[in-house]
Length: 357
Ligand SMILES: Cc1cc2nc3c(=O)[nH]c(=O)nc-3n(C[C@H](O)[C@H](O)[C@H](O)COP(=O)(O)O)c2cc1C
Image (cartoon, rainbow, N blue to C red; front, side):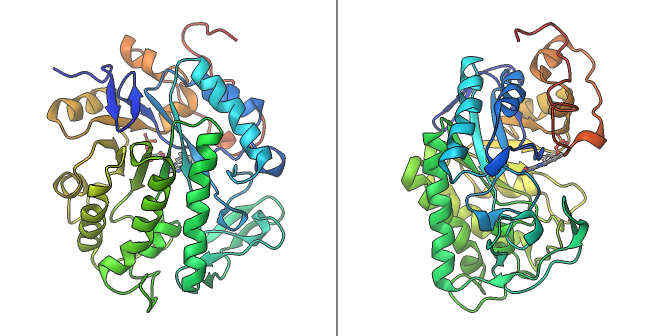
């Protein structure tokens, strides 16, 4: 019988166990949106995970949505990330970087001066976003990308993948969930384009497929993963037929030979996203669905997933693998310090057993 604690290969990524740290935005990048020694300490504390998926990081100034999120496009950012990847590798871990372009889920108040808010179509999302300078504000009205600009954004993802490898990452994960730019292309409500990137399901999937192809050409498909959340209405997303959209996407992505598919599985949908993934995607699957250790083990036993990821547990349990192994309790986290700068609520959650400093 396979265990959560058994090793697994996901493409070119060799994991010591099947417990994955899910990507968690913590808004603690330093100046120039570059990671710091504090971020390195945080990730190194969590290095016993079979794989860390580091927080969503913008491939360009335009891709930024939230406050103090890290980037992966300047030399300062490369140097900051190198602190992180070196510390995780020294602690025996594996780490990939999630590449996140927020598209229309953004405020210019969170971006560098001159950076643009871009989307498949010029449709503003309903809702608000936090900014350090003005508190909660409406999302920006986005500019619709021209066909030529779509190709420029794809090149930003390509460059981000190469830069991530240069910064010492073991691979990258495309954030195609949660209503950000890739999902804005996939969904009928946000994509009303009449060029080759809009209209039919194949056209709406073209952006994501071309991004994956570009990243795979740059660093090898075995180092590229993709995260999706079919049927999620988060950030004002609406799709007329998500089953058709994701069948099309997964059938096109499957032959690329990606390292893994990372599914956030929502329950209570009219379809089962896990079955949809298993039927249409041939590669390894990391399952995320607010699991505990026992539920994760059941999914491994059932062959539903090759690995399982955990988000919120990793905020307050740096040694989650050891806690699961010991059957120990998990510690609760403080929601007030999720996105606040500094060490408080970030690197000060203790491990059960003393760790080397
Ligand atoms: C504080 C916080 C930040 C998050 N940031 C990201 C992110 O950057 N990228 C992403 O794909 N998901 C992000 N998520 C979603 C988590 O990766 C995960 O899917 C979610 O928390 C559900 O898993 P869980 O029940 O194990 O926490 C975030 C969640 C939380 C709570």
